[in-house]
Image 1 (cartoon, rainbow, N blue to C red):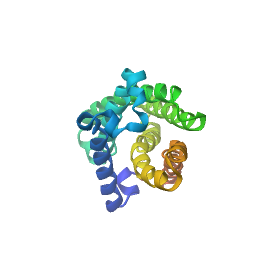
Image 2: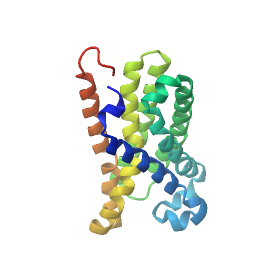
Image 3: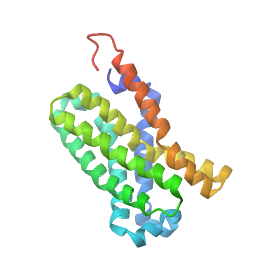
Length: 208
């Protein structure tokens, strides 16, 4: 079942808009500076600048590229473009995921928050790497399932920014940041697994 058939046109449009808007907003540090735009993680820029800028600079690239990888028409009509975008998506995740993992290991936000973001980075790297490996093996059906998982974790950049203001306002910065370290990606993975199970139950002969 193509991704466009799983989501309604309204939800599909919102998916594209959120990915592009959050990707653009994530680069606000280029104009405002790290301290003004990302004050609660700015210490990473001083302590581990290479990993910090790899993460905040390239994670938005992965987010902006992701909708194109789920665009069925592009994949069918321009498979070479699909593959090259996929390579760029994978490289962006490799570098930004490693950056995110190193930031989690050096986090001062407590063990619970650090573990949540650390697991997110590991799973992001793992699901994407698995999906790319399956594509290289020609196992396209399995590849698509793993890229749904990868996409769900990439979309954590969106859900984090949707939840964070609400959690900060209701729980305070410390507790809100701890909760969002898990809330930004665990529900996404639950939805991804539901979509995968739904795809696996598609009638025989229906495209996956």
